Image (cartoon, helix red, strand yellow):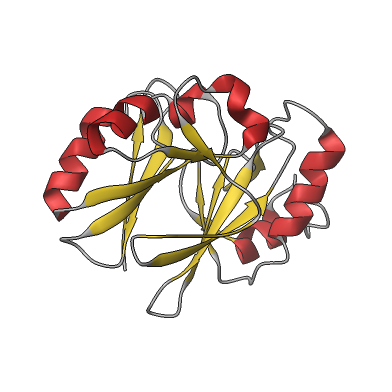
Length: 194
């Protein structure tokens, strides 16, 4: 499996490409402000064609380039309807369960708290690894501020803690981490060991 990411825009939001292999279809997760140009370079480098755009939530730093990319590649953004008010382009509503695209099965976990429509995407790699794209809900050593209910955010963090410790966390900002590392040391995670 090919996973590539880069930070873009004034808030240095992470955008990710996910594909079974180079030279074929891919998913784009969180095509935010400033992501169009570096994304074009990454697509060319790996000879990838987007077949789905996925958003962990609707803030502009995570969907700012989505309308342009949607038009350029003829694929809609998939966004939870709870965040539709932040995005003015065409989108397909995301629901809990699974999305299949580019030959990949992607789990959709609702994670309200940062925004009403925040979600995470889970993927099992062909090599036996586990990935979770957490948007602005969980970061390395921190969590996203809440734009709604603090109790919703806490419940969403508990949902993420049900994932295996070796699950690699690919957050919306900052470096990658693992569920186990955050469970053990993140002071903002419910029940973390201090």
